[in-house]
Image 1: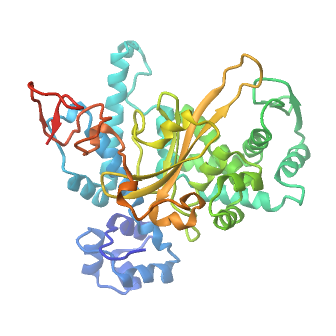
Image 2: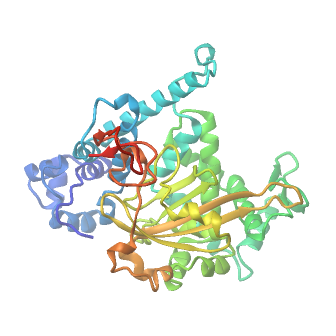
Image 3: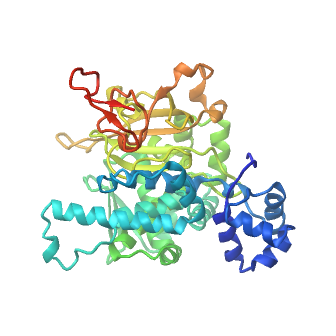
Amino acid sequence: MALQKLYAGAKLRETRQRLGLTQKDFAAKLGVSLPYLNQMENNNRPVSTTVVLALAQEFGFDVTELSTGDSERLVSDMREAMADPVFAEHSTPLADLRLTASNAPALARAFLDLHRAYRQTHERLASLDEALGREDARTQPSPWDEVRDFFHYCDNYIDAVDRAAEHFASQAGSDGIRPHALRTLEGSGVSVSFHDASRIRHYDPAQRHLTLSARASPETQGFQLLLQLALLKQEALLDATLDLARFQSDQARAIAKIGLANFFAGAALMPYTAFLAAARDARHDLEVLAHRFGASIEQVAHRLSTLQRPGAKGIPFFFVRVDQAGTITKRHSATRLQFARFGGACPLWNVHRAFETPGRFLRQLAETPDGVRYISLARDVSKPGGSFGAPTRRFAIALGCEVRHAADLVYADDLDLANPRAFEPIGISCRICERKDCHQRSVPPLERRLTINTDERGVLPYSVD
């Protein structure tokens, strides 16, 4: 990790407060003066190499946590919020947003919560949802958004749950994780059966009976089996994690509990240490990993994006799933690329073309407006209904990372990485994308002036200055 000009004052201050140390004691343990520590905590000075080494030696701190992952997420989210027309007369320089995210992350999150509350209230009124007459029309985040943000800012990695799942997987015999899960449930008095039904999973708590759909794929059956096991056998761990999250509604807590159970299932199916080693050995070949761990392509791609255990991190991937309308239904990024919180993804991204080539992987070299280059992999994901006439749900997933990791990906072989013209220009959201000549632009960029010439017409009805 490059240590030059690493500003991580908020993270340094948070670490000290978590350890219960005064600035004086913390400075002594780090081997620096009190004024120097104070300047680092306020981002007036970068974190020095001496401090980074002391953090690792004195406290066993994973120095990669000093990276700007959370800061980049906050900056991206604030830029999107500032793209709201309500702020049209208050353009905020990107440098100011970065300063706020680095120096005052709590203030940045409060601003995002306030904007989200405003947006939801505005949408209620716009849709005539009886907002003025309803008792529940409060300016609080929707349960779904609150849970999504919880996982987003946890880096999509919950250490206690991941380790519990890995421990459970380690107890499986040579016959595999699925028989082990069945034995565990049956040993707890839960019976399991498979029926020809459209409902994928149903648990009857009174009869302690779990029914799984015989129409579902083996990968889905195994995942749902582990998910139910998590809800029954790991309830204390899940509830303790939920208590720490302090969700604002019972609905949000219930959604998050399912999310944590899903996380446990994926982590048990693909245990961290073994999966990370296999991913490196296979150079992150999704099909090889899916076959080895009995998982689906989507499950493998999602799991790769969660390998952020302190001290044993995998490649920082982004993972996203979109529907046929281009709406993002799942999103996570451990990279500098952050997805729009509202609306769809950039239309120039290859994830949209995956619907046109079912069953095939599409590769793309892309560059974002900040000059960072990525390699992206996209593929369609179909979820059949299991019977004639039943609707098929169609999605497309994308998995990618910065191009500096390309040597570790089998999908980068034979790509012309040295050719700048091989990288397609993509963005995040039109309102915060600064590209002047994008032929797919839907709305003008917030931070650019427009020129409208009534005597001519180009690709767009205006030009961006």
